[in-house]
Length: 187
Image 1 (cartoon, rainbow, N blue to C red):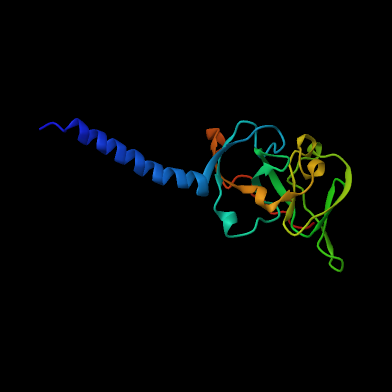
Image 2 (cartoon, one colour):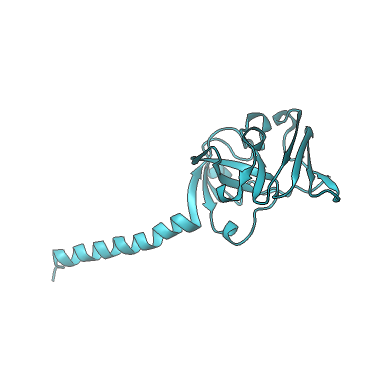
């Protein structure tokens, strides 16, 4: 007995609808692909690498200093960047030469970030002070000489943070779970 053509068409339509009901919410709310463009995060992330972005974690917890994030560029929300969080809400970030100093409050001690994971030739002496609001972050690329980041366009609103890299899928020689994760502890 051969299946009826209308029964086959019904099955195909049902399968497509079920697939859409599963894939679309996953893509929209849980994970999405991202391709690294540019040199701002070298050597941790190279141009052309293919990442899967975890969009769920930051719905339940706040981003932390040292996290690599995928974000919407504040001056054009249709453009996505990959950067590292340096300053957290309500902090003051001071750049003094190659040092990044964080001040948390008037009476609290300042901390100098350990940036030993950044190659010295990827940094230059810079000076500036940036005060962050209640829902603002200060982000920088690991390749400071090639990065457009908070130093040039200001703080990043919390709402612009999309997620964090969950897995690097391409190139196959660099497959990694939670790529770029480091702890930026004080020196």
